[in-house]
Length: 330
Ligand SMILES: NC(=O)c1ccc[n+]([C@@H]2O[C@H](COP(=O)([O-])OP(=O)(O)OC[C@H]3O[C@@H](n4cnc5c(N)ncnc54)[C@H](OP(=O)(O)O)[C@@H]3O)[C@@H](O)[C@H]2O)c1
Image (tube, rainbow, N blue to C red):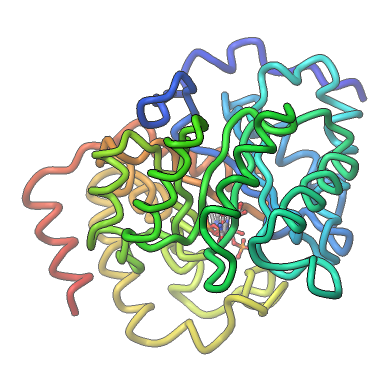
């Protein structure tokens, strides 16, 4: 059936400026790492993209290797764009990345100019796009000179294949260096994509300060710790959870009594705030103005609706923050 986007989609969503750039992003963005691959149900993925867009989520995050198999999430997203969004390209912010293993041989991994330029060309072909809005270097490369990797990003923008560039998984000092090199090249770093959640807080040890000072946006990934920061594992491991359906990056070893106990205690605070735990975990990140958007994943359209509901309460009392700190500190 022909998809007609919700006409009121921009009414309730909040948008934040990405660092000191001209670009605004929705406070929640949708990532296609899991549940959009060739092994997954295409119609479910399509329904999730539609649901997100209907709620004002304009930003969709991909990478060359998302699947499985690698590349299939971009292929499926390209099909969804053609089927449902052909008239809406200018309302979408689409990102992709390269940095992890994508193809065999010395040119299909890490951070050389050869790899980044070829990989983006492949991503554009898979998504049937002329350009992506944001192209990231997915992880730092200890061997390639940072100048080469950053000049590849600069080249890609000058070629018109990406409008903006970003970095992901860079620690504070290497992020600061990358930002400085990009500034010198005249292609400012738009955004950094780090792993950040209540359960994983390394960015608070310097990275957020660098990004705030340099006017670079921040889009935390796995803000729900892949589902640990929801109420789904409080009473066992459901059959439709990531632990069972994928098991690659989140498995039974992560569902420890300590993690479940923390989630149960956090859930009690969330309930008092009138939120679900998933919503509180997202609000807790958004309380910091340096966070441009939180990059959620989902396995069902309802989860997206649920998570977007976090926007209605992103302030915390001092008491709530102290209670949360006490739980996380254990
Ligand atoms: N740059 C990088 O290196 C990097 C690495 C990882 C991810 N990412 C990006 O970040 C995105 C998000 O990562 P993620 O999927 O790990 O994020 P996440 O939001 O922490 O976890 C998503 C999972 O949590 C569960 N969930 C989501 N909303 C829920 C809700 N409202 N209630 C209950 N459960 C809910 C679902 O799990 P079930 O399947 O169990 O239902 C869903 O698949 C990725 O798609 C990707 O774009 C980037």
